[in-house]
Length: 148
Image (cartoon, rainbow, N blue to C red):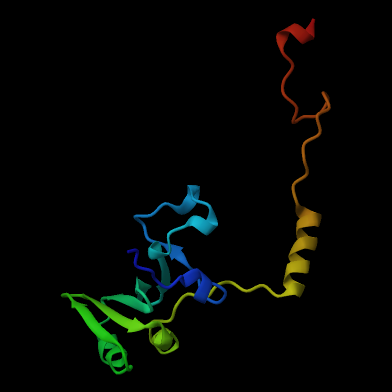
């Protein structure tokens, strides 16, 4: 029996940056086959990642003052308490309340006007494909056999 977890990209990917755990290399895996267990949302004050089912976990390092406000949210539990780090588990339904405290990194949003402006700038200043003329300064140097 395989345990499932919340797909952070599907649930929060439009608004927040989704990254991958350092232990996972998704580069050579098709997008639809990537393992959601390794997804994480980087935050200003920690990291949020799947815990299983509809539970998420938040790892908070070196921010002891956040313990009280996090535990004040209904459904949040302190599951690991270290010297300088703490791990909290919480239902996905209270994500927005957790986000107010941990401040997840938002995904960069570009308006349609900005997209058009960038496209125009790219057309004006973009690199051109090199021409393959022999007199071009970017062409390969002549070989000794062609100089005769």
